[in-house]
Image (cartoon, rainbow over all chains, first blue to last red; front, side):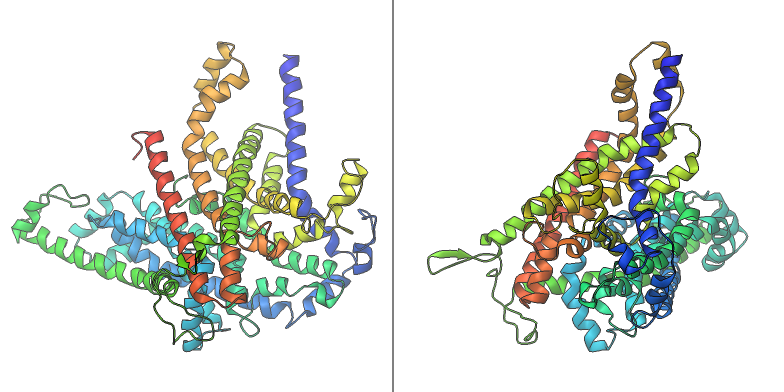
Length: 274
Length: 326
């Protein structure tokens, strides 16, 4: 009995230790954000200090100002998620309710686009965008985010649709409802919680994207990734400002992520783990 | 009309309800049309934004294109890959830098995914136990994975800073090291630095998947093992591990796919340093900095093929090992 209690105490201590190690970098980011550049650069790092909002003020004014980047990030994330859902719902519906011999192939082909390294298609995409005038354009970036998340969205929605009993579709058929009507009026309301969490996940992934944001935008359509990357040593001391900017960037995601914990597992594994 | 209905009676999703045959055929044909109509937009978008650029990359890889002369590119066969010229072998496959990048990528993938699996299982086991403040601890552990890579890479660059970084300070205070280490600049350390950052960021992902699997395990297995007095370690290897294996395999393939393509964390921390150069970083350097589109595209093509090969092999083996779970 005492032995098992000892094991339990040790296990709990181990848990707290793991949590502290995992959380420490985040904590350090938050602490640095409330320092001045000078305090941040002291040889002996401080855990106790007088917090100041100076770095936040400086970070908010960096480049085009935080809100410019945040607006672009929010717009591209929300728009790409909505467009993705509009494209994905009918596709997933077709595959879940009217499967054919080609359905498996379509699913595999769709997922195989995720094998493509972003670097590998950079030049062709860049050239097409240049000739279409989509460089540094928020809708051009939105389109890339849509394509990036589309396989995941389709797969997730597909896995939610699969859970809906087919009898419901049959019943709607017998009542003489058309395919579109059945989808919109019968199936979508049932899958609404699933659609919501899929959307939430796509939103987070688009908000966190950095490769395409950094290569395809520059100024006008620059997102928060560009904002964070703009803190460089060429501009002198910047660690406190950068930490403040990071805090401003991750806070919305941490809040959203809190609500989406479970759904994120399902989404990131293409529904393999529920 | 009725032929179509009869010839595919067992097609999944074909509802053979006892409705009049004429009506059911009409409904089915309408469904097939709707299915195509529904699928087409998604297929077109993916083909345009993913398929087409990939085909272009294949094409560039067999030309002598450079960033300045994309239009005037000539077909040169597989010379970007391998060519025997003037008594020596040239091209990507004869480039030691490329093989260094391949080795680095495989090393990075093997070590980081291996560590993430082991640590992920431990974290999941710990989180699966009941203790005070579990919800909070769970959320704290998951955060690293939910924040943008660019942010985590920058934060770690700050913590790993050789003069002012907290990590050197902590290690020196604890007496682990005598002098500050140049984590990202020292060739022998930088690979471990990027692996550490990746492990920190991705362990929560593995833990989350394993935890989900743990919570679905039947508790009677454990009760039985407890009654029989089997040691906890034995229980883990004989009972728990086989049961969470499917979830673990899923986690590993997703992590491996990301690790094989790894770019941003390495680029932010160590830029183009050859001791951490992965295939993606190599391809970007050829494409953007050396402006050699043909050669860089050849590297991208090989990278794509390697990833496809690894995934297919893994899925094949995984399916066989899981047996029957097809």
